[in-house]
Image (cartoon, rainbow, N blue to C red; front, top):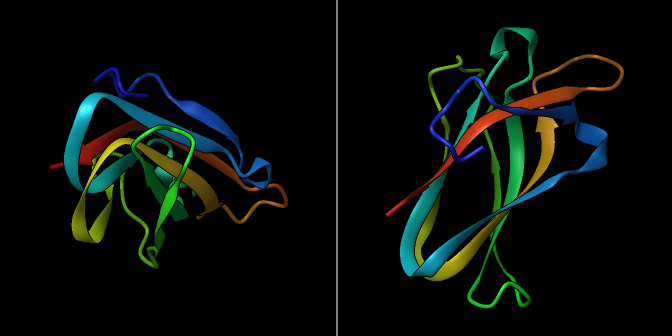
Length: 116
């Protein structure tokens, strides 16, 4: 998911409440994240996430929940901007909703980026 290749993705069911963690070699100041999805025309774009940050990968501080009401396309990331930048070594995203209206909603994430 962080390989620069939008042809590789994580595709699964939302009800698993999947979590994804970005780990940096050193602590860095992060002002937000971008979640790039694929198959958005099928409703697989991420709609709602919670974001947490950590310096040790064990103790997590919530940055809150982000929701978008507007669907987007495969080349537009879902931007999650923090109220204030934070210095951390880890960023964890928990997926809560996608735009899928299926009985068992699906999502597809191909890239995640940290904004400095």
